[in-house]
Length: 279
Image 1: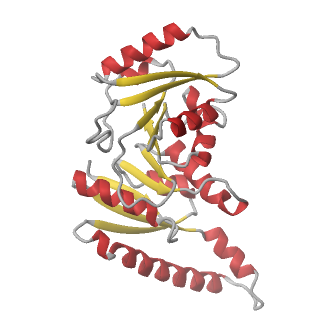
Image 2: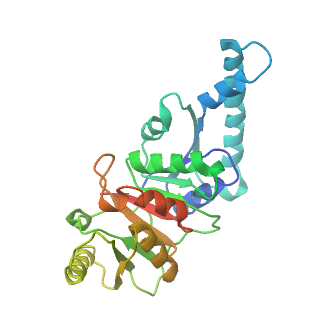
């Protein structure tokens, strides 16, 4: 792994993602690209609220001042003592072409970003951004929910669907279960009211999946719940997981776990990091 992309809105909360990225970088000897996207539309609204006549010069001046302030803040973050010894580059873009373009034009091996979820309306745009990144990123995305002084997941929950593409080899962006004496992982399949698969067939398929991954020690859980997201979150809490892993086929053809609101619900309501792996 060479590059970890960390989108930031320059808030203290977004440093949660930077801290996790720093931990992974030290273990993987990777670099960090710290990216801030300046909201042009928000600046336009700010200009329209002032009492003096608004012209292109006023917006240009405000944009210039905003970019300078953002650049200073990015340099301040990169120079924090806890990040000493890391290679950190900074970049500033505007949202003229949208967040999707800002993310996809910067190649990365992993994206780490912070999201609070939708506990209140003030976090709506932040959560929407997280979902946008997850949908369009060309690499794994790790969504961090709370402050973490260290990131070394040991109890990993793999929420799976019966999909043979999961058996293909995948390179995880960081070490999973390092130092754990427990199971290599916990596989979970959630039955929803419309599901008619046989539990025995599901268990046999998951055993084949574990074998294809070279996993010798694992647990399998098949649970019923109203929605897949609720089942995933409940079981994660039950086993005290410190990472949930979900899978997606990509931008257009999303796997069962990411159909409808499942991924959004897990991202919004899980209290632990969520890793989205692209098949």
